[in-house]
Image (cartoon, rainbow, N blue to C red; front, side):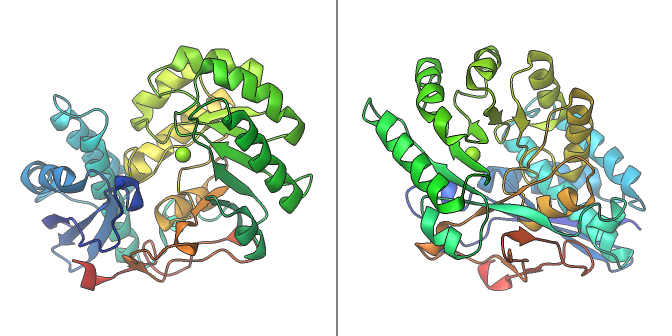
Length: 348
Ligand SMILES: [Mg+2]
């Protein structure tokens, strides 16, 4: 089938707090074909991402044949190469992610199968999910068996706040549960060394984004200090080229590509291949959302799905309808065609 139209839209988000992270600046990409099949994808980059898709990627995609995953990979390579002078990382790849996911949705719908089947079928029928957010007790009551709490370093009192949060989570979830902390680049090397000592008794699974993504050597140095807790990261890295740098630097003990940012499923598959070769586990950022979930379900390597739980304390926009929800701490993609979700058109 031939691509006849490509259109990106920035949704009308209603619940916007003074932080772009509320809705991650996510965009919707729609691809139409000459056989009537339509694909929808979810990317990043905000209005800048929309412009990249509508003014550049669109002209490169019109008339292209998409009949199998290899055609999608070819389209990905073409868009990557053509956007290379201004792209490679960040906004352009976030926009490319939306295109790639729309093409996967399109192809799977044309074949009348879920995306995970296009990727070779399910390797696991349900996936352990973890709840991300500050409300440790509420997530436990919802049935979650694993949990990641946020921690922001402000000053010395925060050694205590981190220990208290870790102790609370460990007590709520039990001795064997995976408990993680995301410090969102607010720690530094010195803080991480001291935290590793203070938090060791709580046996956390990982410390996430302790430094900035540019400091690969610094993170590599901290791995031994933190062990057996893993130094995790990758939501701010892009494509298999970026993760190859992480692998070469031995920077991280667990990789967290965001499938709607890092280059979609095409990049996700390549990143997972690198990780398998390096023996590094992969747990996609926001992996409980369908875009990562289908990939995790079909993967022999990626596992453990992140579920963002902010809406428990504040309202949020529902852009995608029929998203699967975790049950008893586990989640699975639906068997509907494509990614199995419907766009809430009222938000466009
Ligand atoms: Mg994070």
